[in-house]
View 1 (spheres, rainbow, N blue to C red):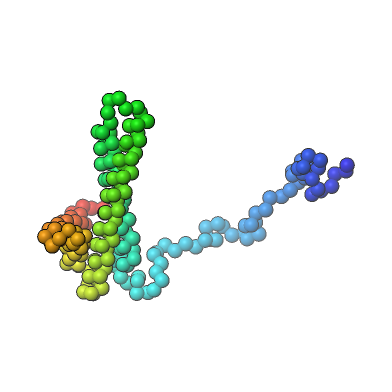
View 2: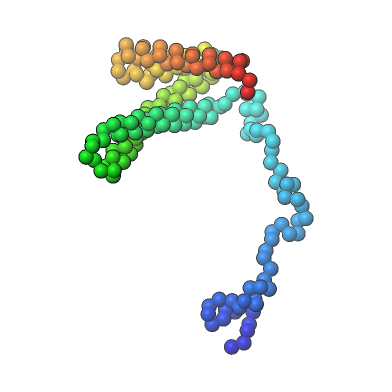
Length: 192
């Protein structure tokens, strides 16, 4: 059988000569443009609306995503560490390695989910209340954050009764107040 370009030979593949003569396709060959000029990426943040560019804070959606995500991540990490400790502590001298690892993984997963979900819900409530306070008061200051912390604690523990909600509200307000104070001190005294 004679050689015919593009037609497979008896082994099912193309001839070696045909493979060596083939030129690879380069989509940028005829452009004669440096690759840096092909993609002009912006150096400043882009906003859909001009009003967003004038605001010096995150939008309510960004706040919601940020606080919920940070809360879930922190809660899951803490819960996983607690579950690891409990699983390691619960192992008995006669247990096999497989059983010990199983206890640790089960404890980490169970506690990680539990604490992660709780902290995520707290972050969700806080972000919603803080954004609501900014919308109602039309200003962004410490009062919004502290009131949002107070409301988050009270709403989170509302099902446990009035006294529990009041205590949790005070704790939430104090924790947020301390957090905002620490953030302001860091900005002022720690050069970054």
